[in-house]
Structures are given as C-alpha cells and as structure tokens.
Image (cartoon, rainbow, N blue to C red; front, side, top):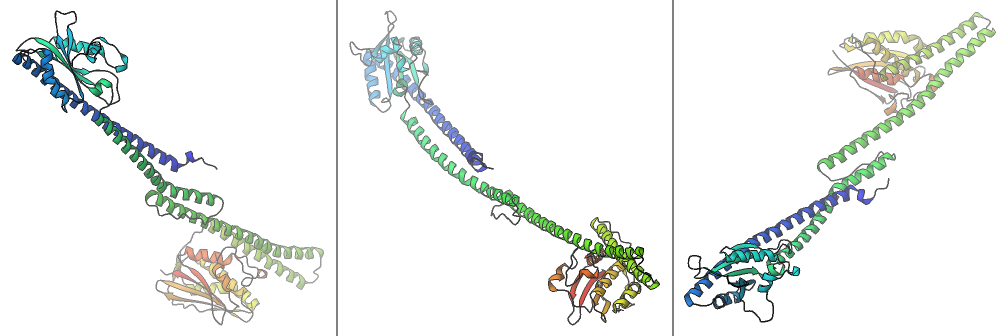
Length: 514
C-alpha cells in the first residue's frame, strides 16, 4: 500500500512538533514585544508628565519673577530643554489663554511663521486624517487645561502594534501654581514618534532582535523536531518493513534496533512473536509431513492384512483348501493378520487419547521384575517363532515404582516387539534396570544392526519410520515408540536411545521411585 509523505507518522510528528515550537516562539516573542512596548509607554507617559508639569511650573514662575510675557517666559524655559537630550524627541507647544478673545487659545511657542500654518494651529483647527490624530480629543484636553485640569491621553487611535502615542496637556498658572494666580496658558507635550505614528527606535530595534531570535529558534526547533521524530519513527519503519516481510512468508525476519523504552520493548516483543510464529510454522510443516507419512504407512499397514484376509477368505469360499491342514494354516494366517489390524487400531486409539490429553494414569506400587516376566510370558510364542531369546535381568530386590501397571505393560510390550522385529534369528533381547538416586533406569537392548545415527533424534517422533531401522514389511506403524515416550513422560520420566558398540540398539527410560 502506497503512503503519501503527509500521511507518514514521521512527518506528521515532525510538523506537529515544529508547529508547537513555532507557536510557542511566536507567542513568547509577542509577549516580549508587547511587554516592552507597554512598559516603554508607561515610562514615556511619566517622562512627558514630568516634563510638562515641571515646564509649566517654571514658565509661570518666570512670568511672575521677571514680569515677562508668556511667549518670552516659554522661550527662556523651553529652549534649553528642547535642545537637550530630554526634549530632542519631544514636541512642546504653549498656548496663551485669552478668555475675552474670539479664539481663546493662541499658540505662542514655538514662534509662529507668518503665513504658514503650524502644528499648533493644526491641532486646534485641522482634521487631517493622514496624521492619524484624534483632534477632538486634543481640543477637549486643551479646553480642560484652560480650566486648570491636567490631561494625559493618547493622541491617536492608530499606529504600529505595541507603540505608545501619549500626550500631556497641563495648565500654566501665573506664578507657577494654582495658588499664585490664574491660568494664563496651556502646555501641550507629546513625542515625535507619537505624532508621526511611528515606532520608537528602542521598540523597533528590540522587535527586530526578537524577530531574528524567533526565526533562529524556529529553525533550531524545526531541525530538532525532525531529528527527534527520526529517533521515534526509525524503529517503527524497521518494524513496518519487518511486518511486511513476515506477512509475505519470511518468518526468519528480525528487528535490530538500539531503541530503549517502549519502542525497544515493542521490537523485542515483535522478535519473540516472529520466533514463536516461525516455530509454530515449522511445527505445522512437520505435522503435515507426519500426517502424510501416517496416511502412507496406515494405508500400507491396513492394505497388507486386509488383502491377505480377503484372498484367504476367497480361497475358503472357492474350496481351494481341501485338507484339514490347509484350513488350519489358512485360519492361522487370518487370525495373525486380524491381530495385526487390532494392534494397529489400538495404537491409533492410544495416540488419539494422548493427542486429546485424555491419558489418565492409575498409579500404584509396581515391581518391574514381576511385570516384565508377565510381559515376556505373553510374548513367548513370538520370541520362539523368531528364534530370539528374551532375558529379564531386573533384580527382584529393586524398590517398586509408582506407576500405572497397564501402561507399563504397554511400554514393555512395544519395546520388546520393536526389539524383536529388529533382532535376527539367534539373537537376544535383554531387559535390565538399575537404581540411580530416586529413580530407576530401565534399558531394553537387542543384538540387531542398531539404529542409523541420522534416525536417532527422530525415532520417538509420531509417525516416523526409518527404512533402515524399521522396515515396513515388519508391520510397524511408526506409533509404538511415540506411545512409549508419551507414557514415560506422563509418569514423570524421560526416554532416549543409543547404539551399543558390538551389539545393537538400546532404549533407556527412567521411572520415579516411591
């Protein structure tokens, strides 16, 4: 399935981290700029207020002390201030208050240039929108100043974001204060940047610095977000490729990553899952091979006795056998093949019980020497026909084992039958047992040709049948030793096989003592 890059978790995580970093940086930069502008505005208001109040007081005092006009006193007081560092960025206008004149306020400082409108007259009469000045507010403040009230306000409503545009209007009392004399004028003070609607140099410089720093921080955050997302998505990409390979049937795929935490645990769990799945698939393949082998063996084992029984039955019906000896020989063959079929069906039934977990043991104390004698007594006719000598060398004084006697009988019957089928005439099958700590080690040894080395690891597998070790013509179904292993393990023991130098094969198993 093709995935677009914008659907990739790597880019989504990187872009999300970058967006969060950008928003946080922009918010921080905005807070810094607004905070600086706010405190700069407060400081500028305070400076303008101090400048206006101090200048108005000195102008009124100078008028009283030197008997000067408002224009003369304003020029003497304000000229040094305007030329100084405090007034370079400030605009100061003095209006004379003439209550009886048609125009109550007349600008007297700075000096008027005949025939030309000045800012002082513009503030009184103009409504030029280009200056972005609230003339009504300024005129109202000047009017309040004639009534002895000081006004601190913003000269306009527009301007750069974060810029302060304050102005101060304060009355000028004759003599310096309201106690000395009446209002003779009004002092208007504002900053050049407030009047022009521009940003002060300090705020502008700081804004540029913050902008440059924000861009640098955003780039660093973007790079860090990409690298950080890579550390997360790289193991996920490996897991994605591995799951794709696993889905295509490559069960040996593994994820190699140095990630820690949840991603490392996820990769570890994936590897364990893949390993378990590989084991399960291999087990299923083995089961399928065993199933095919079972069908082939069972088909052969069923076909051989059924064919013999059917052929002998037809001969009896056709009257081929004339003498009593012929009838007896035919009957013996039919019985033998029938027993062979019954043994095969019994093995299949036992295997089905073991597969279903329905194998239940009835444990009781059992002496192996006595049990083996009983088994050999039942198998004595078969040993005689094969000209093989059975030998029970188990010591009668060995302590008893806690086991199911019927199941143990089945174990020794299968082992003796298996050894008998692979022991040539004149050979021997020996059954022995020794005590080792809290268990008995039982051995069944024959004098046959032994087990091929490549077949040793599998002789106890279900349905396994090695041609060299277990020939099909001997009637073995490949289930006998598998049943033996299941019974031994159900008793808490273990079983294995080996070849005896100079002899044949030996099968050993352990049984726990009381």
